[in-house]
Image 1 (cartoon, rainbow, N blue to C red):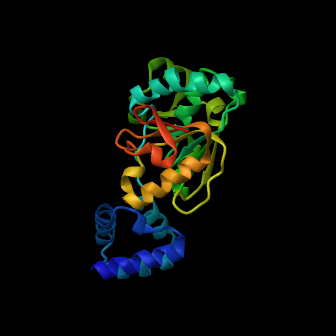
Image 2: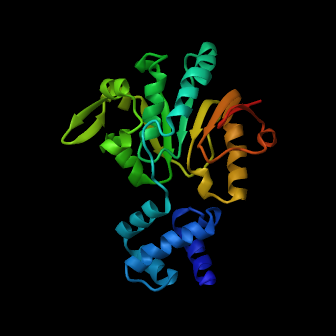
Length: 257
């Protein structure tokens, strides 16, 4: 079974460029075993033969192996820290910040970022880059249409200002939607642009191995300008920030030294 999975890892890497070996094995294996068993396959080898031939099934596999759980203003208190403590200092020095939402999933995070930035800057001056490995979720993010449960932590004033209701769904208004530029990017293997003032990467690092996390912390550090901020998720504290050229600004916020 282990050899079967290792062979599958190699086949998927050759076909898609995604290296499953960099994800925690137990979690990934359980998720994918449950998927292929539901499809009626007995092992990873049988499953791959089907993925190799069927593009729709390959897309479903990619959707399952990525973790797409998101909501607006997730862990609201952290966004308050961003708004009250981090951005006022950043924007005093630079009214045109380079901002990146990494592993943006279905778009809640980059749209939240834009909404928070709009409290400081005119919308025409806001540009948020948003990337994810999964083309399917990027397509959904571009629709900017959400169920009510995604807005549980959104303050009423923000909800009234930046959303409208249509056919039972909440849609992000165009003026916010137009500030976000989506593109596909593999965090682990693709190069990063440099010179960012703020990188937000939350609730994805927990799924990677320790080696993959280290690799990413170095990459994020190089992608930030001096004084730039990395904002991570509430289970993703960096225990040796100085090793990667960071200092702690607040819980889950790290400044490049």
